[in-house]
Length: 334
Image (cartoon, rainbow, N blue to C red; front, side, top):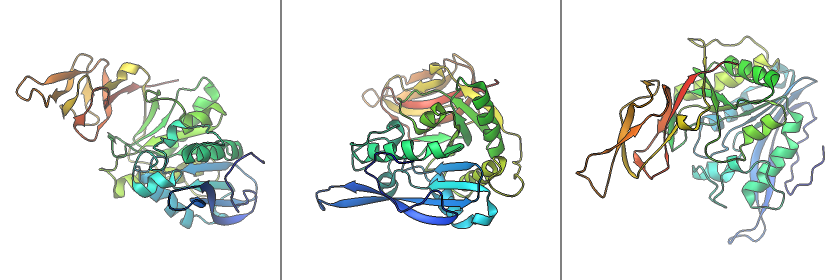
């Protein structure tokens, strides 16, 4: 499908076999008036069948997806699949190279730019190409995230509660197949323009994730990511082999009320009282904030407004008023 884009590539999405290539994004910089940023892409195809579109590095400080997809791109052979797998391990390559959430080139958040704009700064240009060229090819869209530098998450596969009940059922089933401890139904509290939300709006079976954080990154979080991607590809009938079962059945939980997302009531140093997976009751303090201006005054309590389980909290204690502190979830069912 031809689209009006500035991005160029030698990848042939309809060609059988394995291709490693790049998406070329034209740029003009202080050091080079004519330049190109290259976003890596791998396409593996074998005959007809479903298409999976997999991405990591939407935020550059979230590493599980980047490492897992680079490994899987090398590992998976065309004869092991039926259909097509498209992988972009570093969707926001400038942010991946700098290890930052936002692009160091234009300061933008890739996951607030969808469906993008053809004539924009680099983040919008990439989002525009990805949105218009790739999800239309896909049956399954997976965008791998973690807490990055800002938040600790108990590993989960995520999605919005979409209005289409059949689509929602398929997404929950795919999320359960992943095998992470939780399938997490969330709402947008940090703005619009999310890539998974855009893919959901097209009716695609769409999965996001929140697997650990930069501080938690290690063997276990990479294992949960890699095993999960393989399981979902097997569940979709794309990759051969049996699903690898987790130690316990995943639980489906949701945080659909704005009050489930606890933000800092004042600026200061946050002292948590709870760890991930701890239970909390509405009206219970989850921690307290110490003021720098009034260091010997009583700390300001941070009170939960809803009851449930803590699935995430901020990574660093230094918080400004309005910044994220924690998320409370409860059991969810269709």
